[in-house]
Length: 281
Picture 1: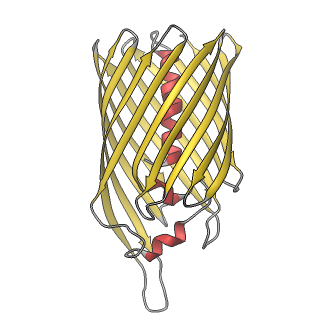
Picture 2 (picture 1 turned 120 degrees about the horizontal axis):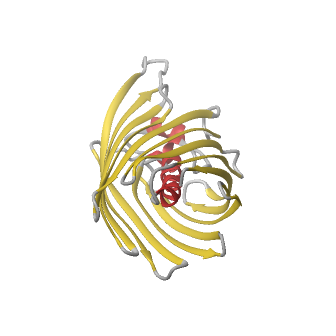
Picture 3 (picture 1 turned 45 degrees about the horizontal axis):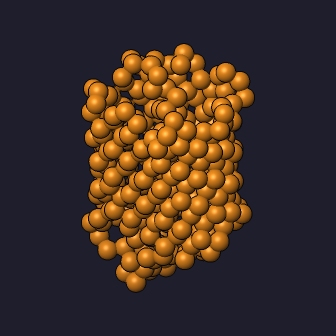
């Protein structure tokens, strides 16, 4: 999953937590920027078809500053379905991410989860179908190649108290081809100093932990994580602090400040702000 995709899925989990009370909808949107000129704009939504069935959607566009070629704009789009039979549920989703003229992927995911009083645990599967354009040279006309990756992971969330929650998530990927730099020099063109770059869609593994604290009607959340690139084997460590605060009975605002420490692009600071609007919940 791309890092922009990961961000959108995390946002959808926030939306789901408000919508689980029953039928209703949540709409959200915001921007994410970093100190290396990466910029992303995202819109998300969640709608309760019934008390136990929800559909979600997300769309985003981002710009990243590449190292060896001009800036590139990419799209992310996601559609999901969640149904809970109490205590077992299933989530299904399909997503598109990338740039059709460079590197893109169509992703299919499924999660089987168990949700009880104060906890949830899920087994996750994802299949990613990639298309990569080998650039033309003086002696080569260029062509598109395809490859895929399968990911298996686990997600869990626990309520420590009425106000404190913890969560963990991880996934490892197996690729159908060898993507190491020695064998795929054209992939160097996608290197960027931003977590929003195309190269960061190609990861070997990712792992995250979350600590959430409710303070009155507001919520603080700390996310820490790490992921390893499949192409360059570089490891990135990240930490993000989020603050969700109500604007009214039907609207919240969330601020986030984070930092990446990457073998690939060094230290980068990330900031985001999102608005959420609720109806019928």
